[in-house]
Image 1: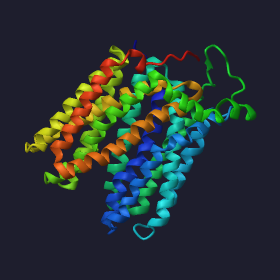
Image 2: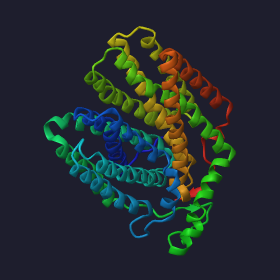
Image 3: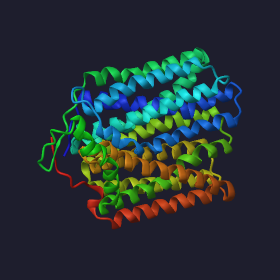
Image 4: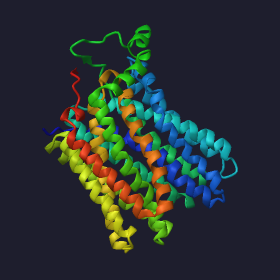
Length: 423
């Protein structure tokens, strides 16, 4: 069944997810290039990637976001109204410290930015779970994926291009200004109250004493309960399996392009502009067509098969067929498949999330996917270093095929939710 999402939700969710990736892409893509251009050594740049761990461990405080919120301003909306300005503040704080002279103080500002953006992501994900109906989630998550790609293009690409003209402070002010935009959207949005679960309304959830009883104290037990359900455990294993093959491709692509003799500018255009545009097309293909026509399990199988084919195409340049035409075709396939895959994954993750603990449930799934990706990236890079790109890609291809087999043998209940929630 098709569902039309209101313009308000499209702008709100797209803007909020875009602002997250503005910060992330700036830290992991633009800033390393800026620091290197200013004479920073590689050891000084390496510590930037430790901020990615904050996003992986955000499940540690996700139950707190579920537990505490404002009845007056909206439970998750109140978090966003606080965290979005704090993200802007941390960016402006970073503008004070010149690079590379004040890397220590800049690290403090960026660490605070990472914590704020990761916590904001918990609240935004939970708000999306609450505000999107099951029929809206396919298109809604294509908007989420698109917002991420647009944020990556701006934060990792356009801000870097503007650095030569604006300098450090000007670039940071530009980043802060763009991060401010979603504030106008969330300030006008009215969040729905907490839902009833199995027909039982929870009117006491926001009272100061009962919050700890209902969600705060039990929040971490709810996370464990979520993980130990048989159908959820099967889904988590699916996420982990696919994460291994997806992260391998993401990790190996850029160094392969460098080894093929591509310039950094050429690589930047391919991976920060052409690739993300292909990813946007893949995301909307999944959200507007795939998830509307097929069940969740079938959609995952189709995306999995496409990603396996995309990984296989990367074996062409790895085997010596490294013409620009072939490589651009491979990049388009990989990003298109990635956009499809994560859109379907995000949709199932929302389906699996219980409304009473939406932030925790969604974050548990995301963290399993993310942490596996970081570990797999390191392992695949090591395999490529010792045995070559082709062996690493065959490992990723094998994992992708095993992931597809896992989806085939699992029941449909592993990819759906049984929770009955009344709005």
